[in-house]
Length: 291
Image 1 (tube, rainbow, N blue to C red):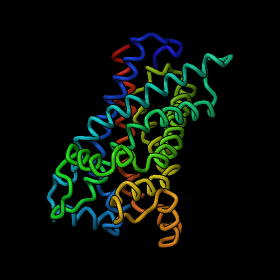
Image 2 (image 1 turned 90 degrees about the vertical axis):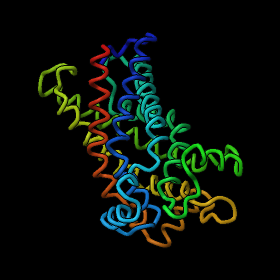
Image 3 (image 1 turned 90 degrees about the horizontal axis):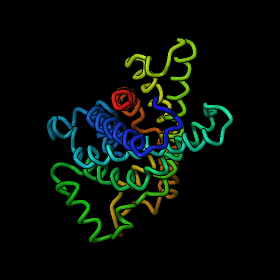
Image 4 (image 1 turned 45 degrees about the vertical axis):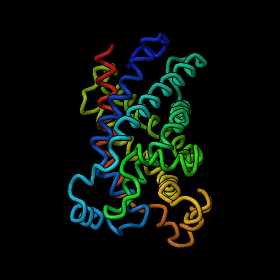
């Protein structure tokens, strides 16, 4: 990792650029898994295998990349913001410390700050992706992300585009607090027990740390993600099923109990391993190349 005390403009640009590369890699790896996850969360299918088979049969292989355009750019921006905000928070906390190393709670805090900073972009981007992923092929309401933005804004205004923002913020803070904490802890252990510098850790080990961090992220935040998907996939106006995140959580509990908050977990965890591994490996290697 670069000098933890470097606050120059060029350092900030490098943090942001590396994050964008990581975000693009994340989308390209994870989009098919994500479509299956969202369709399970919103009740269209009962199992991952059913979701995969029926989607493939009805809509063809390209269906698994539905809604990719907005997240390819949006997630790139989101991950840029995440890594920029994380490093800024880390540098701020380091200036408050007597040592040159954050404590584990401080790593969680820096990660939570990254998630909160990212949430104003994540909310609208993920809603567009979810709406495009959940619409049926023969009953399409939106032809693409631009069309969705126009129709939502014209009927609901900015409030419609930012639907589900409160639960998005909670999920982002928890998820990325755990994500960065786990990754940094594992990287520290590799440095400590391998007696190596951070930039000497091979790419496959960096990817391994990222893969584990991805699993921890979802296991620690998945129920919030389920509620967010339900709110953001809902219809607008009088046809809506949920009156906000709390109402969605209550109705899920009544209908399915605890299990309802873990629908779609398996494809999510399968997706998290390569996505998180690819994200951290590409970010770390990009940072090394940029210096």
